Length: 141
Image 1 (tube, rainbow, N blue to C red):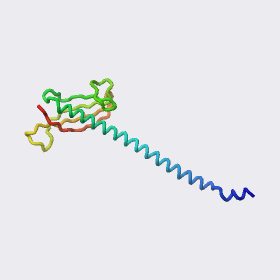
Image 2 (cartoon, helix red, strand yellow):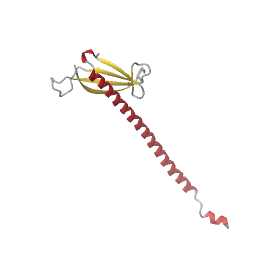
Image 3 (cartoon, rainbow, N blue to C red):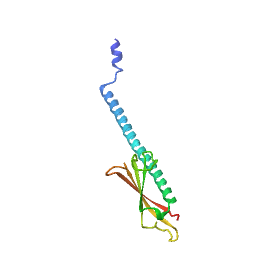
Image 4 (tube, rainbow, N blue to C red):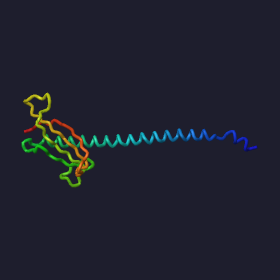
């Protein structure tokens, strides 16, 4: 007698397969979103590091005498974006290349110069990944 009471309450195989299908679809969607979120977080971290390194380089260029600067100056940073004195142990390399062109729309009496910052990582790689950012630096002579 007890067997009949339980027989009406059981889930069918079709219902179980449907529930497992829906659950797996939801879990895979969440897994895909977490992967996308992780990639965006890493990209944001790289962007913040890049802006901090660019600010550090531009600050140093602004305080330097232009006639003493080479046409290309190299700066090194570790993986956390902290300035390194030389290449060993550096993860990022930033090259500041002076350009011959003046920034567009700047009057001739204002002493400004365009500088292209080229970020390379890893610093010691044969073919590193690169990003370029032009900046305008006001000259102080």
